[in-house]
Image 1 (cartoon, rainbow, N blue to C red):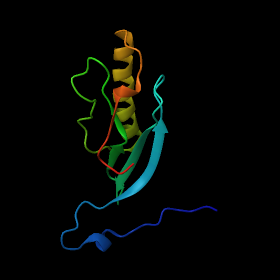
Image 2 (tube, rainbow, N blue to C red):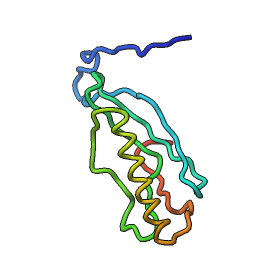
Image 3 (cartoon, rainbow, N blue to C red):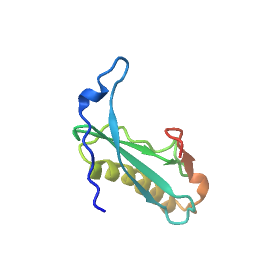
Image 4 (cartoon, one colour):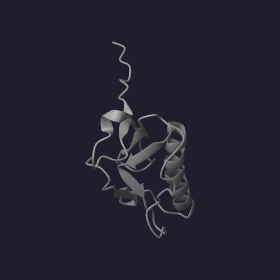
Length: 117
């Protein structure tokens, strides 16, 4: 069965108090080597596809990091750009910790409070 995305006109959301309508684009998952938790990334897009936002199940905070790795980017121009940014944060932080001699551990992952995962 070939389902196509149903277009929802922006005017449907034009109501008092309703702001920033978006749609669910998809969910992607990955694991970091040596960690047992699955990291999930959910992508939401503007109704007209001119920007995308990310929600993630976890943030990476390996030993030596002052806080969890978080992107400074709020909105992205494409799904690929959004995924690349999040994956770079995880991969770079992971690589730095491993190169510093730390052994990967599930405690490196901090659960997100963004969504009910």
